Image 1 (cartoon, rainbow, N blue to C red):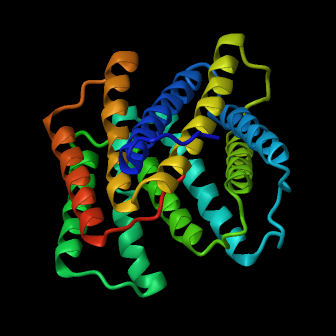
Image 2: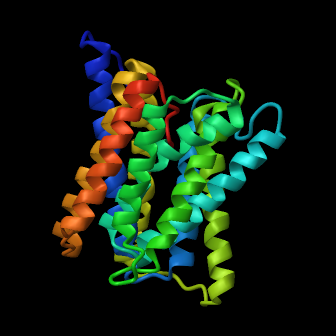
Length: 297
């Protein structure tokens, strides 16, 4: 999808990664704005359906089947379950919690992936990375503020979404190489559509055609999300993973800026300190590990 140039691969990969993170932040902003006028279940249904359709068109254009050649294996089903959990609760967090809080908590995903890799894949993690993981999780606690003084319970949706995405990223590592990115995209957005149906049934709101403005926002969010996914894939395949991946944390910078400009959010000192701990420990962990699986959202 992206043409190669004579630019240094690591610099080009970094540009792709920053572009992907900016696009993901815009996607989140558009979705959150739409949920101000559309029930969250319906919003997830429309968003997921549009994304699945776009990725299906990409697969057809590339002459790929919509589903993996080997069918839905046990590993893909487990990945789909984690994708469902991540998409469901992240969507709820975007709808009901602050964008800045949701985005900050999401940045802890790589830390959970590293810790999970020890259990799932038997990888070895030294004390320095364990310390960085602990500091990053402390940052999440600062963002959440569990003392109850200013805790927004809906922010817990972001924690559950982050854990779902971490599980998805771990299972992605075990996904056969024969499964294409477009196929993973179709499966991911189908999971999002199922999440929307689940929320709709749970809340029981009637289905109704949304107004033109919110509908266009959801369609635009799906288009931007596909662009972000493609840019992320290009980034991970262009430069060295250890060089390119830390730039994923620029997503928080874009998200904070959009949260303040679009929604009038004003992150306080505790929120910013927690975010700094999450990002700093994540970058350190990636630098120590030398490699990190790419998250798809």
